[in-house]
Length: 111
Image (cartoon, rainbow, N blue to C red):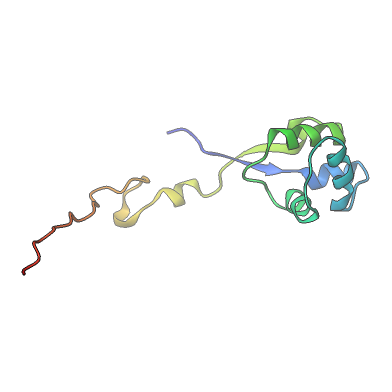
């Protein structure tokens, strides 16, 4: 079984190392590179771990912060992988097993 990977997002730390302590410090530099984000979107990008990230935004961040992808994204092993794989009945796996939907029966309507 292959190991599941997760990641850590280090945008806030990289910004701080460059002297950028406010999330709004990114709005202007992103706009100059053609990336229009609202202040709340930039805040979520800095403070939260993005699940989906446009490559255009990623490339703009790398250019603004003069860093590499390895500086922003750190791959790590997923925590609690074995515990999440357990299902009811003590079996492991993510399948539905013997569970199947019940077939619908259409009866004629009496007149």
